[in-house]
Length: 86
Image (cartoon, rainbow, N blue to C red; front, side):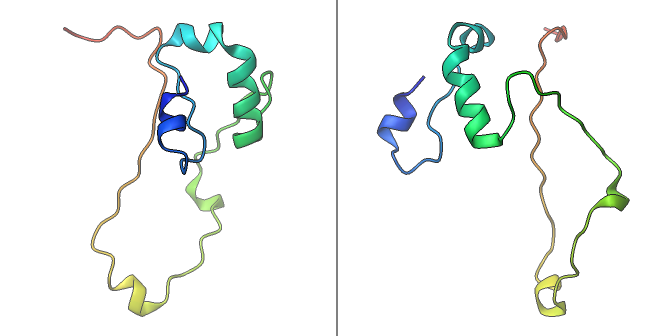
């Protein structure tokens, strides 16, 4: 769990769960890290609002806007409980 953080000390967290069971087995550690890093307590619920019109995005300067050819958005999801095809 902590190997990456020990090897790469410049990383921001450096604690990783190798499995779903790791989150349960080491809940006191992970709960504290998540609370400090993401400001969410163990009993907090995630509130998602996917309405893009509520975003407050400033316009880019024209010279910067012209440099953008494409963009990539990365998301991660928990797939626990979903059967994946083999």
